Amino acid sequence: MAKEITVSGVRPTGKQHLGNYFGAVVNFVKMQEMYDSYFFVADYHSLTTHPNPADLHSNVKQIVIEYLASGVDPNKCALYLQSDVPQIPELYLIFNMFAYLGELERSATFKEKVRSQPDNVNAGLLTYPVLMGVDIIIHKAHKVPVGKDQQQHLEMTRDFVKRFNNLYKVEYFPEPQAFNFDDTLVSIPSLDGEGKMSKSKGEQTCLYLADEPEVLRKKIMRATTADTPTEPNSPKPTAVQNLFDLMKLVSTPETIKTFDDSFNNCTIRYGDLKKQLAEDMVNYLAPIREKIKELNSNDKLLSEILGDGGAKARASAAQTLKDAREIIGIKSF
Ligand code: AMP
Image (cartoon, rainbow, N blue to C red):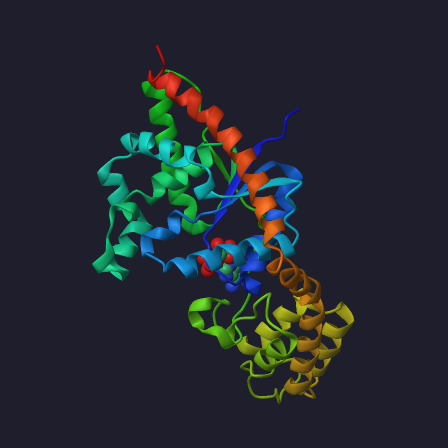
């Protein structure tokens, strides 16, 4: 039986941190085993904020490299740039006719952007959910991994698809369904002791996959802790719990138990805990960092990988667009 199709995109945000890795990248590695997978870099989407061309180019390269270094396998998925698939903007034009102003204006993401960047409320922002929807339906995808913030967009995609299918009395586009890896939903904490790891909290609070060992060590040694416990078996303060949570990702159960015991009997030294965490983190990330470096100086390989991925995506997209045009009545004489 043919595998179900999944599509997932990432914005070209540049360097990926540990939160991106455990929250998103590892899912791609699992998905490529289970589905006929199309993974793309959403470079057109990023134009809504008018990035400088050199930054855009290097951010696209960085994200591709880091996904590959983390185990995304171009032999198991189509890895491509959205801008390499011209059928996407064409189907986007068509689907703009199925998206209504009112619903686009009600989108939570759009409303948030109107608040946060009032000087740049461009039409691309308004129709962002249409482009997102088309990214998915261009391959007639069945399953889409979505976080909470994306659920509304997927709902909109289903509405666009239903309207198309209803108007033309066809069952051409499947209504894409959300899925997530519940058992692995994680929130990687920030090094500043509160909240989740996020670029917006500053470079020093994030551990990047590409960070050199000395940088990782420095950041971890500066991580926020709390007072040493005075009562045995006290609850862990959030900042300390965060360090234990990071340890869970990269350290052995024995190591964790040793520090857990020393916390519980009030002999813990946070300096030792951080030193151990730093070494385990350095070792954990070493193979990924090495691969990032290797890929960084191999543009030929990147071009081949993206060339192949683009060709596979275009073949699938061209078939969908041909069918859609036919259904609509755009055909040759
Ligand atoms: P962002 O670049 O912040 O939009 O993050 C891209 C994706 O990485 C998100 O959709 C999340 O799935 C994941 N992610 C980002 N930060 C974290 C975090 N601290 N913990 C877990 N997942 C995260």
